[in-house]
Image: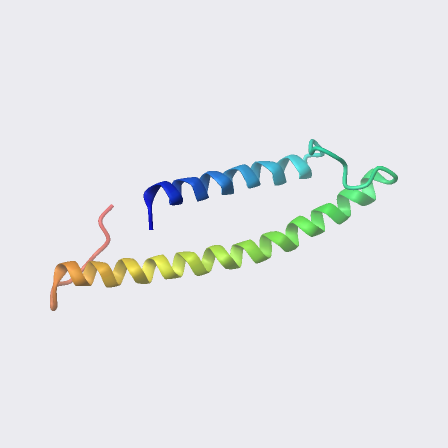
Amino acid sequence: MGKAAVTRAYSDIRAALAVLVAEVDGAGVEPFSGADPLAGLLDGCLEILAGCREVEAGIAAVKAKAAVAYAESAHGVAGPGVPVGVQE
């Protein structure tokens, strides 16, 4: 895992979030539907909500994996029998 790759991934996520916010605000590159903008926005919002559900599940999985990797690494560094806590 490289620090640059992680930074780039989060930059891409932030950019994607900005696109989604613009779409919901009606300021996207093109409307969801030129014929019926309101119905198009309704459909677009449902599409965005469905995508959010999928992405949130993926983020939760990454968080869980990172927490496990952190705990295992911290225990490895501290050695057996040494309590390990998160430092803030």
